[in-house]
Length: 156
Image 1 (tube, one colour):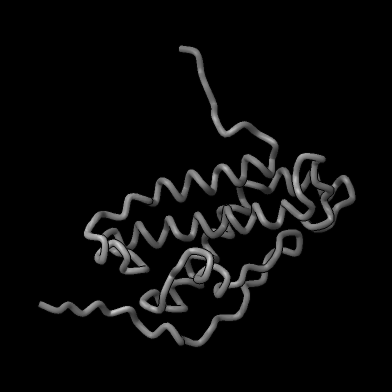
Image 2 (cartoon, one colour):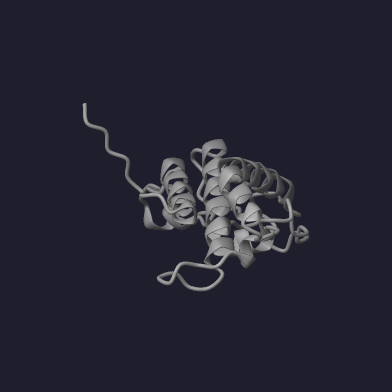
């Protein structure tokens, strides 16, 4: 018995990096594809769409933090000094992680039964990393940027 898995055109034309608002770095769709193992079955237009939407969401969430940094004289995320316990230039890296995770969550929600790597078909199990898991990763990255805890507890 043989099977065929369509993986799309992985040599699809690479999309140009998506320009951001000047404070946060531009986002490169090729980096997103490589980091999250998104193959050519997801079209460049779809990748561009989810990345742009994820950037808008992340920028909205971080707008107050960004305004505080600009007011303090830091015109880009790269210029913001990292705390002693963090590596240099951590803020652009965390921002990229938040955007990539949010974008991947959107892809999974649109393709509920889709696995970009076809690996789950080979293993015969389900993709356990859900859209909610990627959204959690995005929120954790935002929490690291803003210096907030990852957990909120409320006494009832």
